[in-house]
Amino acid sequence: MKLQNNKMRLIAAIVAAVGVVSLASTAAAAGVAWTYTGSTGPSHWNHLDPVNYAVCADGTAQSPINVRNPIEKALTNLKFNYGTSEAGIFNNGHTVEAEPLGSPTETLTIGKTVYPFLQFHFHAPSEHELNGLHFPLEIHFVHKTEDNKIAVVGVFVKAGKTNKDWSPFTAKITSATDVAEDTAVELDWAKLLPKNPQTIRYDGSLTTPGCTEGVKWNLFTHPITMSRAQISKFLEAYSGNNRPVQPLHGRKILIDSTISK
Image 1 (spheres, rainbow, N blue to C red):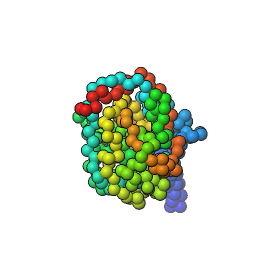
Image 2: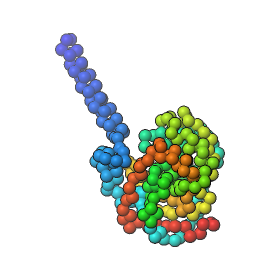
Image 3: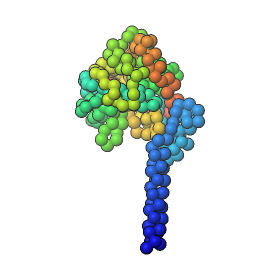
Image 4: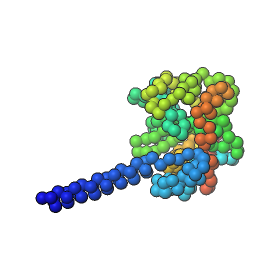
């Protein structure tokens, strides 16, 4: 009996040890730390997790890019089903986001595909370049379907007049916690976008690990304005959280030539 008990304890110890290793490996994979500088910065992302982040280095359709000489094409305007709703603002450790709370109904339609809206976040300076130049800020409105199709809308920001529609967000940037429900405000999502509907479009990727490709990128050509005080709120929270531009690898960049459609 003693021998059997010892054997059972040994088996239990082995099972426990395997379980601990398995959990530790899972936790390590899920919690790989990455940054925008140094040994955990963009040029090292693929080394941090060679399995899940490999495409960050090996991909051929990576974002952001430097937009030069886009091809004019008659494109149908993006269709936003954006309204006013409660938003939760939170700090994810790399940027500050805002997401619809409750039962969100906001969507983006491109062609025949309807993309539910997930959240927006910012990068400072802009991740995309226009003819080699950055804007102070770039806002990304992220959309995703149930079958994992992703479309991102990029909005550039330049210094100018105070933007009252963005004030509820800018007032809470520096005090946001990591829980969206802790900081709830009301946002009119549609009014956060530029009025001119012209966009630049190309196929790219997410700009953070694991740099997933197959993303439909839509960049508004006309920036919105915010006051320098508002922009400073973004920079106080995060500055330098932009991935460098990536090789184009022959991809086509299109610009809408029929903005009235």
